[in-house]
Length: 120
Image 1 (cartoon, rainbow, N blue to C red):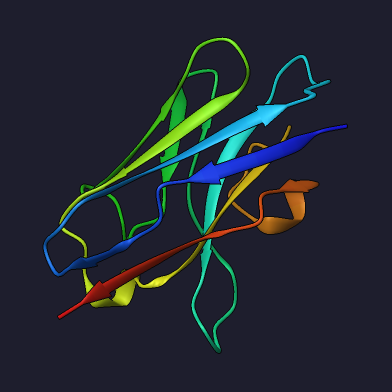
Image 2 (cartoon, rainbow, N blue to C red):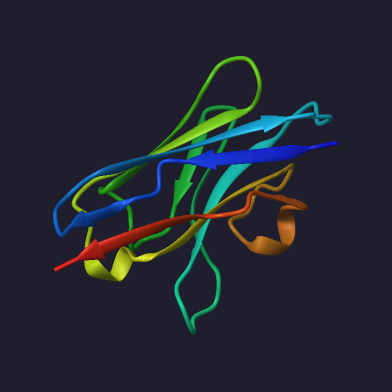
């Protein structure tokens, strides 16, 4: 059974940094992608970044501020978030699958979400 465990959400001030982590257990894919999505209250879930075999892709609104990386061993991803803005406030979700796109439909496995709050 595939399970995702996220960590790292917190409250910070504008301009601050946070690092989110996601560890996957029970992987059955030969090739896989790990992605981060976020959802703010009243808004649709949106893709933030994904990584697959070291290749990365970012949403325009985080490019240059966020960095996604991949760990060793079990599928693991870290999302380093710098220069945070109030509009980055959301619940951040880790997602796992074999998609090559940054759309929610491509990922069958999801974490429980971790809250990121950026105050001005």
